[in-house]
Image 1 (cartoon, rainbow, N blue to C red):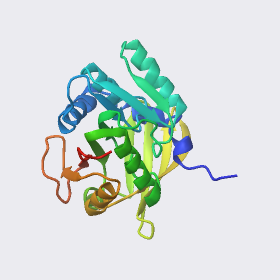
Image 2: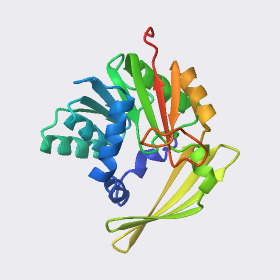
Image 3: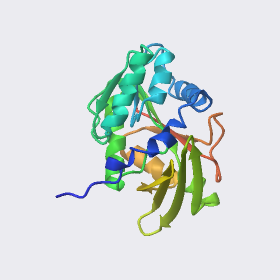
Amino acid sequence: MSRKEWWESFFRGAWLDVQKGRDTAEIVDPAAGFIELALALEPDARVLDVPCGEGRLSRAMARKGFRPSGLDITASLLTQARKQAKAEKLDMEFKQGDMRRIPWRNRFQGAFCWWGSFGYFDDAGNLAFLKSVHRSLKPGGRFLLDGHCAETLFPSFDERQWVEEGNTTALLGNHYDASTGRVEMDWTLIKNGRRSRRHSSIRIYTLKELSELAWEAGFSEVHAFGGLSGEAFELGAPRLLLLAEKARNAR
């Protein structure tokens, strides 16, 4: 029997309260605005959200008049995404699947991967994801990746963190494994006096390494920003926003 990966069971239970805490206009609207501009989306453009989770950013893009599709491996999150889209009467498409094997080809004008959802896999798997995104884009399409990298994370690396959302508190213990280049995270989630535990593991790349992965995946141009105002990326930036473009003559 094959070993289950951490992401196959992580996104459930008390963690969902932490995730719901990100679904606010103050967080979602600026991100959606930056995505629209960075991807240079034309009216009615098809756009891919991968992995989409419960679809908070997909819904924001649909409200702007675009045609989003979402892909995620977690069935319960997709059920929630479809329910919320239906309640808002938004025309959206959600599919369950592995983001290393995106089922669409040459379909989207733009794609995005948001909130630290990159680096789940080993190097080969992370490259496979980028190649899969590249295949899903039309020639000239753009991909926007939001997350941490070495330059954002390590200048202020915390071995312990507290996160509070609603009636859930999360105690997070972080450990960087230099031999694998991964941050191993042990989560203790406390909700209504009950505790549950999770583990997650993220591969941390430098900007140079990420850019090289994007080029290897087939992207022709790569640019980096340090925030939603489009500021230049530099050491100590709070996040990395990596923008990659598929060549216009690509197949």
